[in-house]
Length: 247
Image 1 (tube, rainbow, N blue to C red):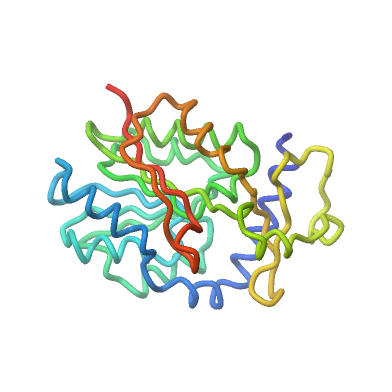
Image 2 (image 1 turned 60 degrees about the vertical axis):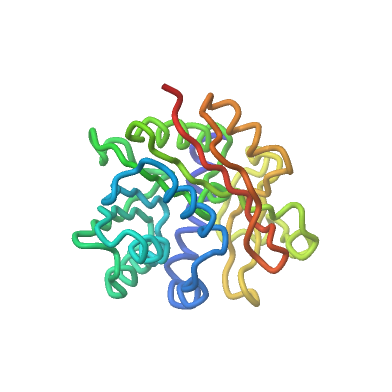
């Protein structure tokens, strides 16, 4: 996928998260059930009592609030492309003693450059990977995040299992309905245009096939600490991967 197509797909999502921030945030308040298993894994690990946490695609900060309820001294950094959702995260609070919130676009801006030399005990990438256009960009993002882990740290990510459920497949729209011009020949298998809610907005999402994310994770050479499915009405809407960088 070329850069122009990646930027076009990203513009679709930037528009959505600007125009629908209020409605979207209102549906993203409760913790995901899958976070409980992650929390148990963290509790059983040797992570410090005040872990440094990087929440990539943090939205309104609900994962940070969930973590702070278990580790009040956490050092939380949340990154998101939406100013509107970051404002909601700041207003809601509950993110630990000195949280840092930063607007940054993962597709078009340099996350590594902004982070500098910082390392983290836990990096979360929830509900994000399906919005990153192009396999090469998804792989580069994961490799970069693995390189930001402290010794023994965990990268926790989810893959949205959209392709496995008819209720999502039947909602796919034609690219002719895209709000931005793009070269359809540059799209990769699984790239889809999907309405949100009752059609209030459109999002670019990548429908990963059943083994696609597992193959991507395997290519990283990381240690898979845990893999499981959780969330949604089926209790299997997300596939979780908990990774550690190999020594």
